Image 1 (cartoon, rainbow, N blue to C red):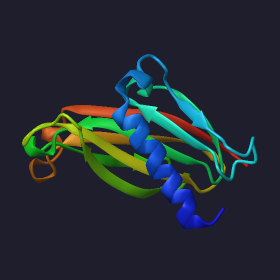
Image 2 (cartoon, helix red, strand yellow):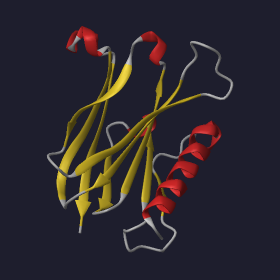
Image 3 (cartoon, one colour):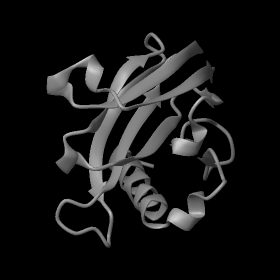
Length: 148
């Protein structure tokens, strides 16, 4: 599967998750692997309910993190530390909710790719960047164990 097709599939799946809040109720981490386990096409999707959990993934796996956000308030999710160089941020996109009006909320979708084996933490914060650390109103942390 070529790279552009992989990203198109990732975007479609992300939109399905974002547009289907019922899908996420109580499900925790969701893993998608169309080829049955070689790690090359595995995508793990996390939501707010996964905060504080330990996640196991393999090198080259994609990690999609979907968190509630309303940028019109000035608060936005930002990476606050990645477990050394275990994963690399590939994309960060804001997707407004379908029923959202001007000033309404939506989802921040962050996509990471596992780079190397090891253990570390992925930390994010919801803050107003221009106000600095005192403005942080929420944090999200997962412990990552990346395997070969």
